[in-house]
Image (cartoon, rainbow, N blue to C red; front, side, top):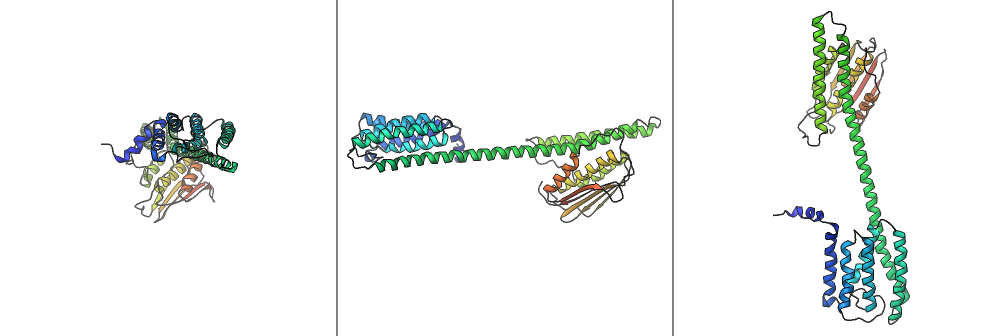
Length: 386
């Protein structure tokens, strides 16, 4: 059996013409009920007339075109207006006369082109109909009543136009939200790729360059090449993890790099020839949200820059875990030199770190130290959502 909750979903799968047809059928059926005869719209003072075959045709012209009111609104309005004119001129005054307001609302809401021309044509067509009804009638209705009915029809048109503009504004808002979301997602992916690729590639370049000078020391050469291999494997692992996160079919069971991997990161940097002193204080909170990942990225980018621009200089990494925040400080003494053949920087890494920390409501700074060298500091609130 079909679930009740799925009925709206199944209904919206039908063509719009099929979904609009029941409204026309309902008005058609109501117009044929004898007690509803001559109790519809009465424009002019024509005496009521009994229903005949032409009355059925007039009612059908007003009702069935409602099935195409959204697909072909102008065709719908033309046929409904023709049926309405016959209905009023013959004095049937059927319940189907209400369809003219629905047709006008649909034109105002769904007509995309020639809107001004259609408004002019409707106005011009209404005038002879009003004049004919006034002359054929008993004269009981004043011209002001025809004007009032015209204003009522104009109100229906105006409501449709308002609905159309509302939909357009909402569609534009959704488009802008989608564009902003895509841009933010692309920026996030770019930051992740930069952090992962730049760090590992920089380490591999530095290690491979150093291996060129170790041909006379086979043991040290073997250690250097082993370090390159291990770094490449870690880069592959991190890239696979990142691709898994980008994959929409990927679940949430995978975990991102955390502060617990900082020691491995520091050790890798040491094997690249960078003397690093690492201190970690405090106990990580049970739930840090994405703060631990951001802290990891801060240390990773700072060590990458140290390898690039201060290769061989003493580097200090200090991480403090507080109850509500994680503070990170990475500094160099500036005594080293640029690593041979190291990739050039674009400044994107530090800018990306600043964005990461700002999103979590923290503070980030990077600049020259008081005694030379370079210092990167970050205060990252813990417990922020990922």
